[in-house]
Length: 110
Image (cartoon, rainbow, N blue to C red; front, side, top):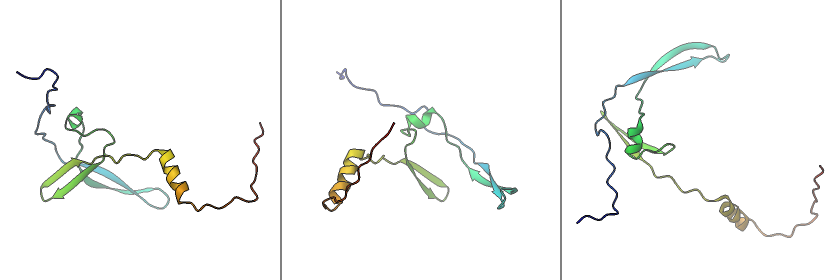
């Protein structure tokens, strides 16, 4: 008998996607920001809900491995952010301890 509290595996809508290499125009300008010419650069656009189904979330870093006739795109786990208070504590621990002399008082006037 199957367990009742199990989640079904997420299935990707289509495992094979057929895309076409297009181009992107790159504007070249002179020192006065006047357009001198445009050049073409090959590009592939990836977009769609299937990216999220495959595990690619918005703002997630990715690695792209380039081989002859092959691109491999994999997700890169996000590095956890150190809370600001922890970072500040680490900075103050690294500072030498000296008595403060001639301290200045700041007054705020409204």
